Length: 287
Ligand SMILES: C[S@@+](CC[C@H](N)C(=O)[O-])C[C@H]1O[C@@H](n2cnc3c(N)ncnc32)[C@H](O)[C@@H]1O
Image (cartoon, rainbow, N blue to C red):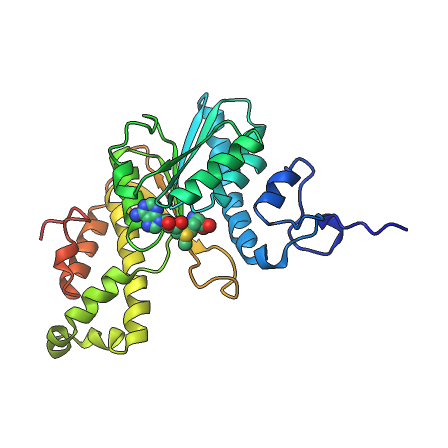
């Protein structure tokens, strides 16, 4: 009897849906050439697939309220997220849509363009831009409904948030990457702060500096979003055994211009307490 190598039958937790493009999955090396699940891709697939499950209801909600939707993915890399969102969700919609990848590396942009063309994913666009250039790029549509950033390096996540705020984007879904900037500032100010701040024990050792810097960064990002009128939820994306960069931040613009004064105050106090005054402009805080 012939062995069935289709991923549905090989006891993988991730099941390929009948409507999914097998060609896409092979091109992204999620499936091997002979159609088996590629073990090396399982970790990435799990993260992206989970993220798609969080974004799918947002897209469905938008589609019930309006006739089209546009999503911009920052630090898109090989655009796994964009391709899977297209394949699993967007292609089933009756309304037009665009999924746009912003990526610094031209080779990755060319790769994604070629693949989208090959598999006829016509509503995907890719731009070789850094995240700050995206802010002023005339190529991006006026109306953007969702901004995503999956492991966009360091401050590229902040640029994605900045972009979303400038363009009044109602939905932001980010999974931050490592964040070195704040840990660097904590380290720089360590000797000064150690003298008069008991909390400095939180980042005395280098590994704590890094982890605390990362944690504090994400806390401040959430407060910033709240202070700008977003409702924020934070959860883990997948189990910690799959990724250390696992924090999923989902922000939804509130209907009323309900900017949280409390969040703004908390943000201000964190900046002052941890000698991070230089970051005040980023978070639009007057000290
Ligand atoms: C860790 S990878 C993640 C890629 C993809 N989102 C994923 O999860 O597979 C980060 C990507 O962000 C890109 N990147 C880093 N800084 C960027 C910036 N300032 N503007 C645009 N892309 C950036 C890098 O080139 C890289 O492809």
